[in-house]
Image 1 (tube, one colour):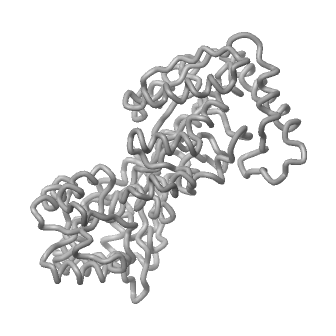
Image 2 (image 1 turned 90 degrees about the horizontal axis):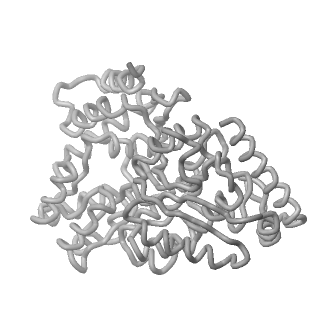
Length: 425
């Protein structure tokens, strides 16, 4: 293992030397992630290549056909190089576990869910992105996706999608585009129409939006298992009271995802906070009136405060033990560039992390993906330990039901934070 690690590091060092030679004076392309490279560096890579370039790529079962097409295009770009690129199937949700079983035997390039990155970095499985060939990864993707691909200030993966998050679906026959900018305006419009707005406050995934919007933080500690939470600090009780007041209207109602699906279909709710997986349900119910937007602002002590959200994305990593680091990185760029992300959206409906792709006419024409892209500026990657979920669920349910026991709000938040920050046993 040590010998192979040495080979991998030597290979990337050689690539970087070539990269620096290839981009001399090209200062307009410098990125925070490392040295900029371009055509010269690719030619240097080609010139340094002997024999067949053998690579293994892992993509999800659903992404096999599209990924194979991209691989075929990549091979055609370099007719002077002999490639043997094998595509295997591996779920993004289980990729970490498979890679960590035997890193050296894992694929050269693989796709994984962003919440797995810390474990992969800790195990030394991911090659740091200290240079790039064809595009600036850090500057051309939305900030949330770049943050998700970064550990301790170092970029370790290539964002491929940014569509695991939430936003506001709505029936445009009831709400105007101006209405959906403010939760107060939405509640007024819903009340006038005799409908309601659904949100699952029994899930910490959604409860987070109020506290994070107010600048109160939730983060994963360096141990990778415990949390740090400031929800009980100054301003926290104001957020809690605002939540109680909003759900106390009887218009904003606490509903699970399944309950929202039923309520959309039967006309009970005319808007809901949810994700792309609920788009088909809303579109079928509201037809031409189906619309979506970023989350609204809410009134916090007289100040309109933008609701935040968790975000999630899929990333492409390069195995640090690959015998072909340079070609693996170049292929990873190709699988995640602007064109590839637009094509993946058209083929599979997956939301791009690439800024230009997210702003393309094709993507903007999709209400859910466009709303998710708009929410990206107010979203942060989900990085929480296991002890977050139960206390946040309890807190959300108490606040949504109006704090029926009359518990002092500071005590309520202190208790929740104590549970959220509790050691994992």
